[in-house]
Length: 194
Image (cartoon, rainbow, N blue to C red; front, side, top):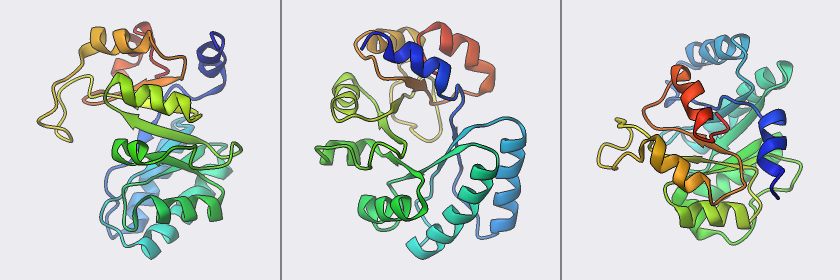
């Protein structure tokens, strides 16, 4: 167990791109994905709260093909239209990963996908991190580390708070919330995967 974060640090991406809400103009969205892939991003979470499930499936397929061509992983966020059931079905059909929202993580009792497909979870506290680890998720994201518009009422953990929670978990954990690639070195210094 003690080797898991070390092996993950070597094998898993040190950057996890989380997309903004896709616009109805898929071409512009796909161009931004292609730029990120060309810039070396190897793990992407497609997050949409507004697209209908059929449109999300179409977009996910287009993003998945671009990711596969560049050797990158794609994970679909479970918080969209149709919830975790729809996201899991899309992920299984397209052979991509699934990223659970923290509320979906709390509702399940087992890993949501087979081991061959990547699975991540959003966490905000130690109990959620422990559950993600217990059910066999591949990694977690923890935040917000800094103030962020996406969670305006959440108290930021700060890097010392992140590191304190990190000490209890062997699962690879990404720091997020108000962070950019410029924060990579400080995140890694506090035990983050990236």
